[in-house]
Length: 234
Ligand SMILES: [Cu+2]
Image (cartoon, rainbow, N blue to C red):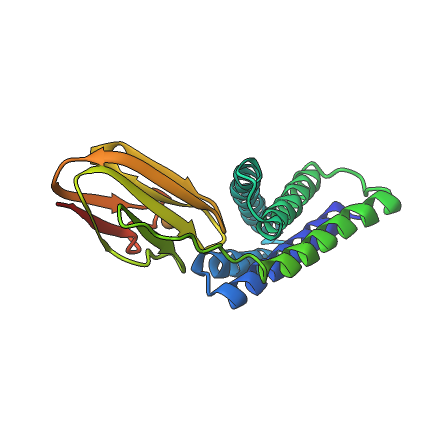
């Protein structure tokens, strides 16, 4: 099987999985990635633009592989839900397969033996189906809130609140992420930086004196998209 054909299979699987997640969770990052996959796929259709398409898809696969593999590792080490882990593992699998097929296509490797080609294509498609099946179940668990702590959630590249209040002393901010990719709860002035994967809940525990502190998400582009707020400590 021709490596460039395998690139198409992997890109189509990734696009379908991303757009399915985007449709079920209204996740802006997933929409952008799904659309970018479709653009890459379209560019492959013309000989002149095929190289650009491969580079675009290669970068997308690399980006998704990095974030989903690290999210899967984090969710696993925290013993979090099987659904979210399956979603991240399957997206990582599609992306790693996709990245390898892009590299093979660039190296102009001779066509892969048909059984191997079929296996690679099957892995991409099955991983896509697993991603779709687990996307619906990737919902966070609600944790009980306590008076001494505050909770915040992220959805559609936005914090659930842009104003948090807490009492001076030890403060615990629990954040749950409902989006496909990582978000952070970061306060530079207090050296707070908690990273939260999909369906993960992580707590930032720190001590603060009375004052107003800025919190934001460190993922590139997220703070400027509105992921910044203020924590008022009284
Ligand atoms: Cu973010």
